[in-house]
Image (cartoon, rainbow, N blue to C red; front, side, top):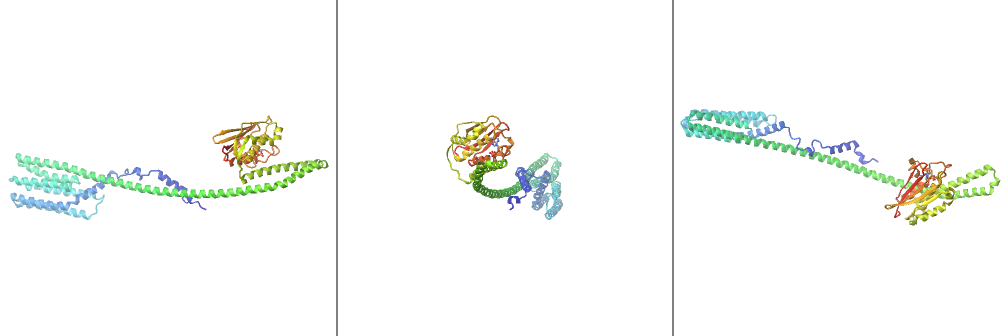
Length: 505
Ligand code: ADP
């Protein structure tokens, strides 16, 4: 069955997670930092300036023509028609050129590539218009009528002020228009030579300077507004991109998480399935071992009893070989009996429910030592023990623990006089028991192995045994959720420890 989480290739998964951790150029952290380069921003600003310049050109032309006609009509009363008509023709021509430019502009599509061209063209038109209005300073200046001169100055000033509204988005256009409009009139007033006209000339000049200063300030404000608008737009674009990227990464992370969760669930299910299969198989095996060892007991007893009878009654009728063979049968049957007993004890552990009661460990130890009396005497063992606690446990199992560990301590003795000590100390909620001897010891590399079923470190001829004793001890201790372990060194004795919770199971 395929594991769903594995649908997503590992490599891709890792790549995506790295993506999520690495703040790329478009993430929120970098938002705004990628605003346009100054050149690109200047081009975008130029587009907006040109749009604004051409926005009012048509209206401005109508107003210019109207103002021009009024000025020409008024001044003709003092100068006669001729100069007024010549000047009107000039204004008309300039107006026509500018209207043609505006129409051409309207037909094209404004973009960053052509904005500078249209701006230069507007500058040129503004220059022409300024020159035409400047010409009025000479052509429409009636030397004998101060009132007409004042009117001329007033109209020129009005044209300059009006140009702020239509030309100031590109300051050079406004500046060329104003300077060309004002300077000829200034020169003409100065040429008149009296103090009144000097004063007028200076007034027009002062007005020009004021207009240029104001115009420049307005121009800067407009440009700054454009710049901020583009920066804000770039910032919003960056933030939108970063948000999209974060959303995408989030989705990918969620998908990866879901994949992992699915594969986790799948694995958990499989582990649970396998565990239950295993425990079923284990139970069956234990049942089999139990039944087999139980059924083996009877024929084994028969073999042992009859071989013993043979030995007792027919020894003198048999030759040396016959006696030796019967000896083999007898010891083989004895060994097999121990094996079957151990196996039975082991398989009973899983099959039978625990019968818990208050167990006085000291009493249990005395009973075990009584059972092992022969072996103790034979080995001349010196056995001591600490005061042992009373536990809530299965008495038979505690007895089995002590019996196995003590019989091992006796069996694996060295040439030294044997000393065994049984101890118990309280550690938190557990009692730690220990059975310490000064026997042959165990190489640390076998610390775990010896607790396995049928694991033995010696041959039968060296030390008889089945290799089940410690496995049985481990199984008993684990039923109480305790653990068993050994401290030992070869030739320096062993200490077997096991823990049992004070409150029993
Ligand atoms: P058995 O005693 O029947 O051989 P056990 O399961 O009781 O089997 O022990 C497994 C092995 O652990 C023994 O064969 C022995 O090599 C080692 N062992 C157990 N107890 C001791 C001990 N007190 N001193 C030295 N070796 C021991």
